[in-house]
Amino acid sequence: MDATKLKARDLMKKDVARLDAGAPVDEVMTQLESDGISGAPVVDAAGRVLGVFSLTDVARAKEAEAATPGSPRGEYYMPETGIDEEADEFSYKDDYSPEALPTGTVAEWMSEDVVSVEPGDSVRVVCKRMQDRRVHRVLVLEDGKLAGILSSFDVVRWIADHG
Image 1: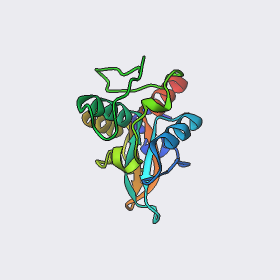
Image 2: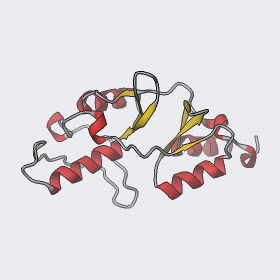
Image 3: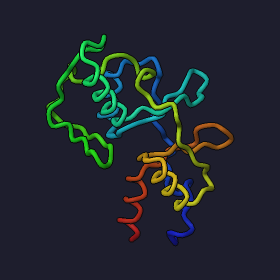
């Protein structure tokens, strides 16, 4: 397929992990690592999208907690986090401990500002939206409902495979 004709529906993942807003952060981090993903949409019982929780949110939580010593969540240390200051990205490291994670629920740390596209949007539009909003994934919504998710890695994988 010609890259200029690619649509969000062509690259999106339809089987999307969904997170519960009330889930504890440490459990969700374990789920994300187990699933091999860095973030997922947060949905309510009716399936409505409430936000997105990602490793970037954990990195921001780390920064917020470090900036407010004595906060109820406490201070912690996360060696070798892999935070890239430029990309605002966080990567898994084998040596973090549960004490290094922010406490609380997904709802407390998720991004409520959901960046989304429609299935028929071109991949160029998707990439531009990711770039403009400085995100690594967009939700694909059809008639206001979650139809899929598309990450920058999905686009890179397609280019590598079809170059």
